[in-house]
Amino acid sequence: MTIGKNAPAPPGGRLGFVSLVGAGPGDPELLTLKAARRLAEADLLLYDGLVPADVTALATRAQHFSVSKRAGRPSVDQDTIHQVMIRGARRGKRVVRLKNGDPFLLGRGGEEALALRAAGIPFEVVPGVTAAVAAPALAGIPVTHRGLAAGFTVVSGHAAGAFEPILGAVAPGSMTVIVLMGLRNRARIAATLLDRGWDAHTPAAVALAASTPRMHLWTGSLGELGTARLEAPADAPGTIVVGEVANLSALIGGTRTPARTDAPRTLDGPRVQARNV
Image (cartoon, rainbow, N blue to C red; front, side):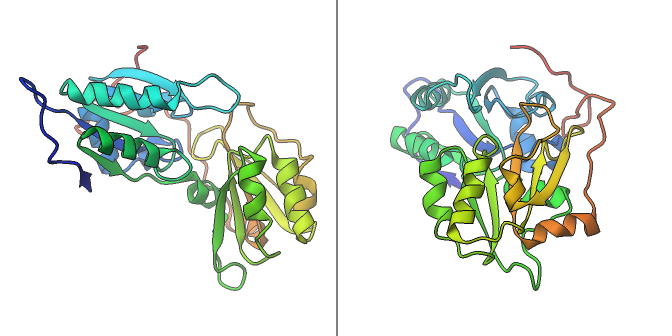
C-alpha cells in the first residue's frame, strides 16, 4: 500500500520515496521478493543493528546508515531517524528504512509512518517475516497446534512496565506466550507468569539467533527459564516461547540454516560484497 502518494514535489526537484521494509528474522533468503527489490533500488539505507551484513549488502548502490536499536547500546534517537528519512526523500532519494522482523511489530514502524505522513512524504510498508513466528517455527515449535494452543500472544520483554500487565492478564495455559527482546528480563517474565498461576512445569523454550548458522535452542520448563544458562553469543537475539507447544520441538526437530559459502546475490543474480560505509 502506498500512502501519501499525492504529496507535492518540492520546487525544482523530484520528491523521493520511503519504504518501511521488514528484514525478517535474519536469513536473507527469508526476505520477501519486494523487500529484496527495494534494497537493490535504494539510494539511502537506514537499518537496525541486528540486521545481518549479508542482508544490508543487497543495497549495493545505497549510502548505509546504522541506527543501532539494540538493547543496552547507544542508538540514534527516533526523531533523528524521522528527519533523515524525510530529508532524503525531499532530496529525491529512494529511502529504505530496514527494520528487524516486521516493521509494524514492536519496531516503532507506526511512529515512522505517522512522521512521514505528517511531512507529506510518499511511502509504503513492506511487511516482513516476524521472529515471533519464524524463530519458533525454525526450532520445530508451531505457535498454534490442535489440542494444545488455539492462539498466541506476542509481547515485548524489553520493559517490565510493558509486559507485566499483558502477561498478568493471560490465563494459565490458555495460549502460547511469545516474548521478543526479553532475554535480559526472562527471570521477571517467568515470575510474572508464575504469579498469575501458570504451572512451573509448563514447557518453555528460547530460540537464539534463529535463521542463522549460530542458531541455538534451549528447552526446559517455565520454572527453569529465569536461571537457564543459554549457550549462545551474548549479542544473539532471542525469542522466548512458553506453552505446551514447546514440547513439540523434540518431535518435529528444528531447521538449521547452513553457513553461507558465497556472497549474497541480488535479484538479478550477480554476487555483491558488503561494504563499510
